Image 1 (cartoon, protein in one colour):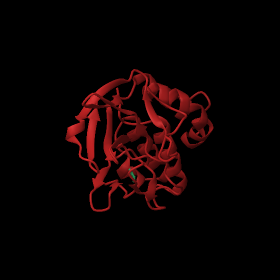
Image 2 (cartoon, rainbow, N blue to C red):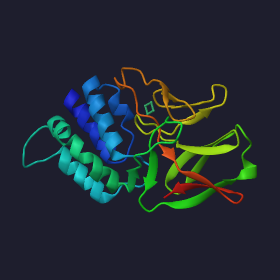
Image 3 (cartoon, rainbow, N blue to C red):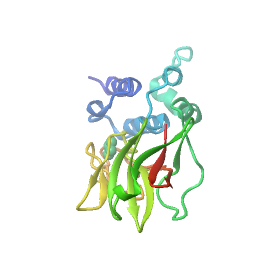
Length: 218
Ligand code: FES
């Protein structure tokens, strides 16, 4: 299989909402970077893909009228994709960060709603709990009595992160990236997968409402 065919298959897997992991094993650094950009622009997999988004992405990647390669199409269209794609999956990003100025921006579901994921009594200080709030997956963290929540979706290729109790960090089972409990990248994945540092994990808004711990889900 040629490099171009492998890249095409990886893009097709992304568009079909499948992990392109198998196809990325043989891609070069530039192709992986392009694929990574597509995945970042696509937002998160925390919501089912919007058919309009898929259609727009197809149009951007494969503009038949201009008869240019997927690679050229992708590079030329990448910047313009961001807003439309994020809107297409129903997620937009807040521009502000938390006071500690660490981790990524907060997810802002377009039609977000507060969803209870625990009670205060459920979560001991120091605990880390995975949760699903509708289409949003994250970790609830309690430190010093305060709650925060971060996305459980790796910013590389959107695999689901696991909490490593011994290291007190989040590890990706796919290519080994590690994030701290604020969502900042600690290490990985290796250069063979992505040549630049991954973005931090998104934050998820959280509040205590009486005895309920709620996050802004979708
Ligand atoms: Fe590759 Fe997470 S998906 S490191």
